[in-house]
Image 1 (tube, rainbow, N blue to C red):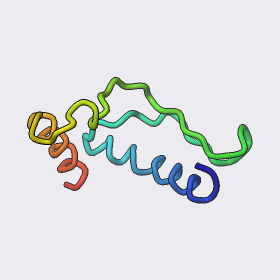
Image 2 (cartoon, rainbow, N blue to C red):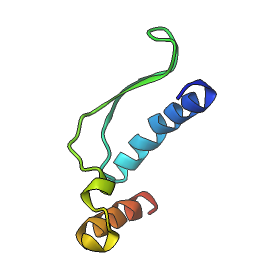
Image 3 (cartoon, helix red, strand yellow):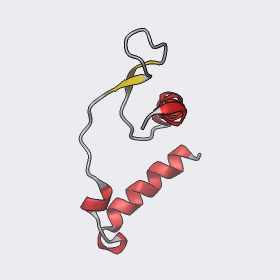
Image 4 (cartoon, helix red, strand yellow):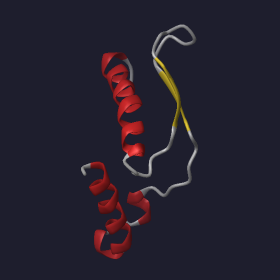
Length: 81
């Protein structure tokens, strides 16, 4: 994605992800974010690498894996606490 929408998304992620992590939500740690354009001509982020499963591939049917969906619900509850 290019343009102002991509820049806005990058900025939003750089603020929202650390706040979510501080609330206990399992998100990767933001290592660095720069939107100055001094190194590359667009905003960039460096994130901690974490293992995860693509939810749509892991549990294609919501009823097939209630434990996964309960875990997702717990994460959402932490975020909206």
